[in-house]
Image 1 (tube, rainbow, N blue to C red):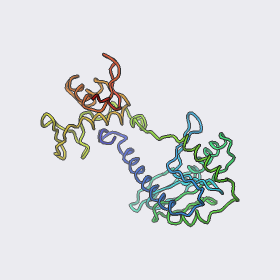
Image 2: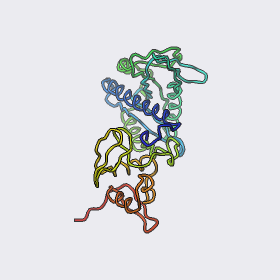
Image 3: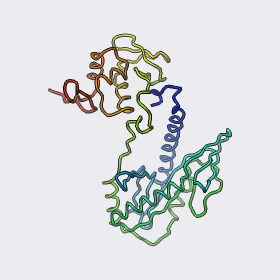
Image 4: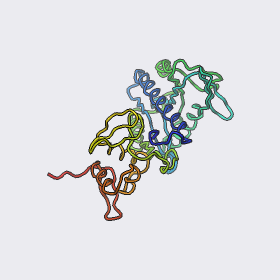
Length: 305
C-alpha cells in the first residue's frame, strides 16, 4: 500500500503508524500466546486466538484471545506499547509518553475489553447461553510503565499471566466439558474471517491517487524496461524479471477483486490493449464475460492434458 501512495499524500504518515501498530500488536499477541500455552488449564479448557464474531449484520467484534474454562469465560486484550502509559477516564483513552518526549493518544484497552464483554454476552444470549464474561489486559512489553490504573480491572505483564490464570478461580464451575465443546463448535462455525481488502476501501483512499506503473518491491521505486523480459529499478538498480504478477497483485490487494483490460493498461502504464492482454494472460487469472464486458478475476486456470 505505502509503495503505491505518493510520498506527499496526506495519509502516508497515518498508514506508516497503522503498519507499525499492526506489526507490534501481532508480535505482542504471539508473545503472550506462548505464555498462555504454557499455562496448566483443566483438560476441557478451550483457547481461541484472533477471534472475529458477528452479533448483527452490521456489527462484528474482534477478540485477541478468548479462554473458556469450567469456571469462567475470559477475554484477554494484549497491548504491546513502549514507554509510559497513563489511563485517562473521561473520555477513556491512553496517553503514551516515549523516552524521546513524543506523546500519542491510544484507544483505551479497558474500554475495548468492556465493549467486547457486552458483545460476547449478547452473542451468547442470542444462542441461549447464559454466561457473563470477564476481562484482562496483558502488557506484552515488560518495560512499559503504567500510571493511574483503573480500579477493579486487572492489568498484568505477560510474565505474570500463567500465575494469574492458574490461581484465578472466581466462581464455582459453571460449564461442563460437554457444554464447553458445544460452545467451541458454535464459535468455530461462526468465526468471521477478517478481510481488509481492498485496502483503498478499508483505509478510505481514492485509488485514482495511487502511483501507476511497475513498482520495485525492494525500494518502492519505479521499474524501467531493460529488455524483453527484464526490468531494472531506477532506485536500487536491481534487475526484476517479469514483474507482471506483482503489479496485478497490487491491483487486487488495493483496488478491487476484478480487473479489465483498460484498468490494467492505466494502472500499470502499458502502451496499449495488446500489452495489457499479454500481462493479464501471463497472470494466474480467470477470464469472465465477452467482448467489451470482459474482465478477469483471481482463480485457478483449468489445465488441459
